[in-house]
Length: 239
Length: 341
Ligand SMILES: Nc1ncnc2c1ncn2[C@@H]1O[C@H](COP(=O)(O)OP(=O)(O)OP(=O)(O)O)[C@@H](O)[C@H]1O
Ligand SMILES: [Mg+2]
Image 1 (cartoon, protein in one colour):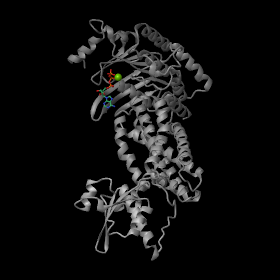
Image 2 (image 1 turned 90 degrees about the vertical axis):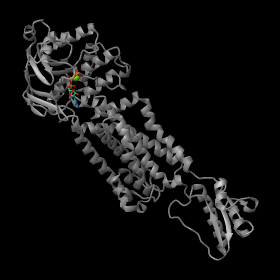
Image 3 (image 1 turned 135 degrees about the vertical axis):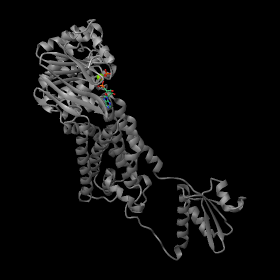
Image 4 (image 1 turned 90 degrees about the horizontal axis):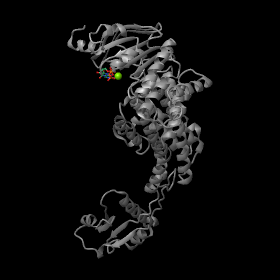
């Protein structure tokens, strides 16, 4: 699915958070939203989902103007804070989120089995989420995002609190999904993760300071490290 | 919609404390109210100036079950001071000239028992001249638990359901699951109906438990059909779920929801029959018509006390249902706060 973000602005109670953001991304790629804490990554993801209205500008997903209920059927969303029901088992959490998508019983059951296996949660599926570890919750949260076989995945800092080994497998999964034609938009403030992505959008102080292919962005730095672009922005050398 | 209802039910299974609160707390509270307001066996103590008060009156007072003591055996300055100093005395009766003077400390339930005994005594003494007998149309000889039962039935169940639906929904908001679940193609009205069904299920169980307990274990008399009580109570419970949901959409945190209880819920108890509406000054009694519990309480009162049938309560039940429908619509619109569509 291709996403078009056109001159989007958003403020909260008069305070601007995002300013004239524009970019486009195509199917079968990973876009990384990179930026320090408070840069507006979560806000941008919520705007793309249609959870909050933009103050100005336009967002389109596969040619349909956001917000659009139909589009949500094909989106997988993983919020920054695990939105899970602590009083339910992992499996019941999945059953619940599955029930909100148009899926027949058989397919729902299959999908739940698939994502549980994929994220290595099969053994703990009957356990109440209250007794899950932080990493298990993250994985379950990711599992709910994958449940409906989305064509667009919006993942808000999916790898925070995941151990390095699992992180590796998770990124490999993302790459595999990309090859299947799925669009992934992943926010992170871990600069190293940017190399896993195809394109990067660098957010700083509510502005999109750089946007482009990760390889090109890195090539444009002196040190080969993406942080440099933020340091330059902080010094006001990059518009 | 079904998915949400099922999830709410599963969630209750994982949260035993909330389940216990919704199912058993009202029963405990009713037991307590039963003992607090039930038939009182209190014996009032009345100090009488036995030299001045006719012996007939004294023996009539004793016949009424009062504990009569002779004022002549006590040392005191004046009657008022005696009442202040000796809290075991509920009333002092003396004679001044041709009049009988009575003193009580203040209008408490205890002194009311003494007044009642005195009235009955005087009545029985004067029976030679007049016979007077009072008649009560409904619930003759009822204790305050019995005559006010409908207030507690409607209000307490409303209160508990409100608190639980409101609290869990606020938690759903602050925990981010509400926004998360709205990021699926589910429609807002489906969310609201699902919640109402899920919590309504437990509210219904609670209603059945409470009504059966109050009518059959605590033996609250019910002149009309128990089925009608169930009907009204069920609609009342659904409205309470929706009322709690509305409060939770407005509230930003559990704390704010708790702050709403004394403002939105507690005042409703005053308008559902605890105080006769006609006696409330400045037309404030009319506030009753915008409080849902009023309609439930009035319908239950009619069935329990007056023995009304469906034709006597359908209007109130309908008003309650309309309340529910309005809340459902308002809540569905208010969910826009969390998803623009
Ligand atoms: N609902 C809201 N009301 C008011 N201000 C908000 C709201 N949501 C976000 N903000 C503000 O918008 C700015 C950007 O927040 P956002 O959550 O998008 O940052 P972020 O890039 O995701 O940061 P982090 O890496 O810490 O998650 C912050 O200053 C934040 O305080
Ligand atoms: Mg964020």
